[in-house]
Image (tube, rainbow, N blue to C red; front, side, top):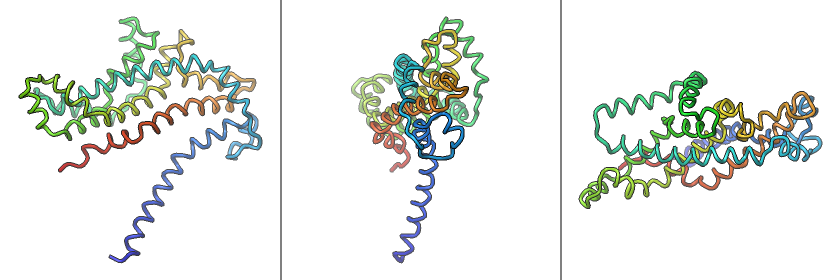
Length: 282
């Protein structure tokens, strides 16, 4: 094949990737630039990317008005326990569906996967509130955490099952010869090998729990001090001197994005490895 024919497909691929990257990065860039604008500038010339004058006071006011210290602690509290629980339940479910044998295994697996294509949205909110009310957790962050853990995200199950299936079954057979039970194999053999998929599921679940708005808002309406950061950031819109303080909300949003970026940069290598594992066999 001629060199020109080899280069052309690469150029097209890189152009497509650059366009996709621009669409992905632009909202974040606009948020950070908008966080330095005054409220009047956002309303009158919001299409301008670079602020006429950088207003660093937005961050100071957002930090004070949103009670960022308390709200950040609440978000971290939800995220840490949710991520830990989701990793455990997802790996266990993936291991059971990959290595276990029980009636209706494929049926239950595909039933869970089918939820990826069904979005119930707020329809499940009331039933979840009733369940948490029975156990007296409808006004607690623990109610939100338990829902995150036991909701069984289909994507996490698919990733964990695929990763476990990529581990040679000969390891299981050798462990059985040594006297390990089904769950001892998971604890001592499979789980230590699942570091990449743990990072992948951890990042996905951290993003979900950190950015969750509706569920924490409903569970903390009676106790505003327990609100997570995302709920507090949205409330910044009506907390300033203006009728709609978009500058404060954008500053709060910019602050709330930073932890997600840091987590992703720290675990990016494991995240990609966990996503791509199991996709190629042989």
